[in-house]
Image (cartoon, rainbow, N blue to C red; front, side, top):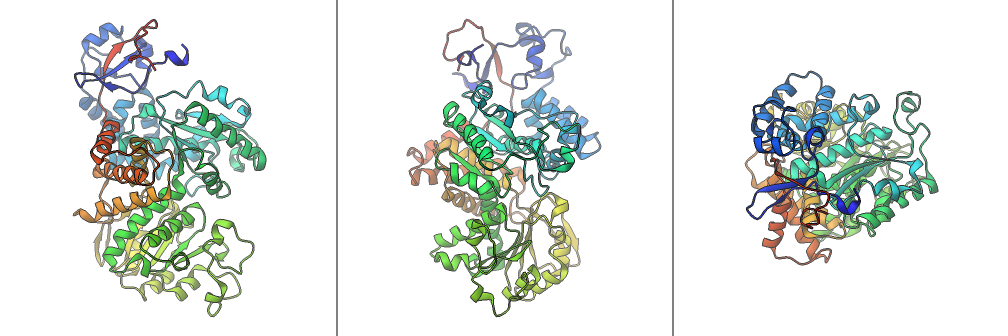
Length: 581
């Protein structure tokens, strides 16, 4: 069947408002299609029309009953990785049931399909009993990427998440295991913002790995040679992007978990050529900014009045710094004044102008040596020395160094600010710079804490506290939804600033504990963020002008909720354009 004869896997509303979907499949093939399978939910009529009689039990179960039965089976499984595999298999068997289950139990399932368990899945990827679906674009496909992708890219695809697996969370090089991250991100687009799963595609660029454990593992499924770098790597990525521009020019591309040598460089190279963003840089920056906006309201000290020390100076750290500076610029502060509020500390100590060599993205935030020479030692200036001299109101961790925020450092900070804002953001949980319980205990409950991974409520002498997760899932699904709904052709930093402000305002308007609402409100949050992003896209001339009600309507039309469509039988000789792509 040629590409012009392909039936859309995204259901549509008929004239009567009923959700309907055309398919050529029948019998066992239909039961093996994640897009069309309804399991025991097929009606008696459909069982006859699609030759399913005898292949499924006689009694029909509603989607709600299927969710209940599936959750009972899921709950009986011991071990987080086993739960992850169960859910992966369910997703590839019946996407509607999978997302109905996730939507109903999002709070408990989110840590399994995303952080922290997705990190374990990335590390053990080749040894999982089930390998998640997606496109594995190998370096061996160079020169043939168009040929390979043309078999899989259709007009259904609206969002692609691509990774090369070099820097997965705080775990480093996971090779093709990065596919688990691409899959997880796209699951959140659907669960949080309603983007139909058939509109999404995860891709991993397999250019080898520098992880010796993987290279020496005879069961590793990726290319078993060191990572391709330099001009050869760039040519491979260039061919990939050119193919996307040719085959699906309107797609939104999300760069995910690239190494620090490539993440920002690829974003800068392609952001004007294709509608794309990097969630590790822009998404992390925006969601952290939103959390800080809420935290500053609580502390009574404005963001511009606060010195910010960030441990770590990679993509996440510089993305946070970029977001903070942009926010201060919009408030009328000068660029130099804003940048000097940011103090980056990496493995070589404080980033300052006398340090050599220093990467370009770090140099932007290098503190002038003349400013610090009166207190800085000649050896690398560490975190403790920086905190002692700067008296920051805000301390953020993106270093993946567990326990880096020691009691001495935290209490030094707490001596100079009444409500210290401390965000240990590194993922997964084992890499967090400090535990929330320690932070609250050491500060007598005064610290305002948000983390990268989920943590339970904390009980200590100062009271009981809800720990907010500074999770990118609060933002990037809504950002993607807003871009698609508005028809934006480019993603700007101002769109992420608009998203951060929308999330902060939504959070401040609620009566919840912590900095953000819980995930039971995530679809409404995504809707609010999408509107802000769409309006910003129009104000910047990046999308056609729409009235706000029209943008709302587009957003609502894109927000799919899991329900079984009415299946309609298609035929290969059908020429009805309503049935075919």
